[in-house]
Length: 153
Image 1 (cartoon, rainbow, N blue to C red):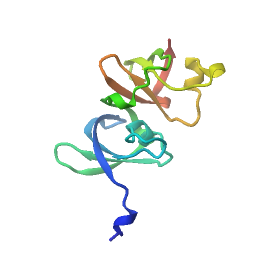
Image 2: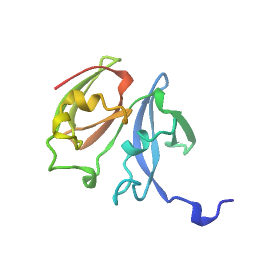
Image 3: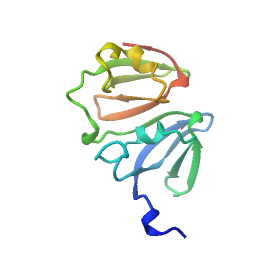
Image 4: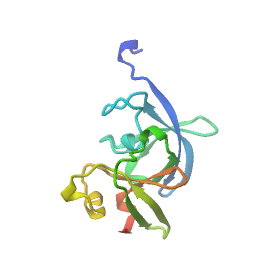
């Protein structure tokens, strides 16, 4: 169907989605072997923050392919990869209170300009729909901003 030269090689990354109103969905998202922005493998945060309105997911255990509207995804959880951490950055500790009453706690590690390096500055960034929060247990949460009621350091 497509010439091999036009294919973008991808692999599956296991994730858990919380989708409104469906609830918890377990499966895998497709990530590129090389990120368009770096030499590393693409991170699920890059996929979720891309401009496309829908996310492609392979559901487990049945292997069914579904397309989820990113506006309906409340949050995504997955295991962190060591190569995607930034130990040299000063992390921003935070708690995000969600619309369902749950809290997401962890650290935000994002390079920000020195004069715009507060938690509020990160939350107000327009170019990212999902907030990436790393936990001490090695999990990553991607939280859809419209589902956050409040945030505090």
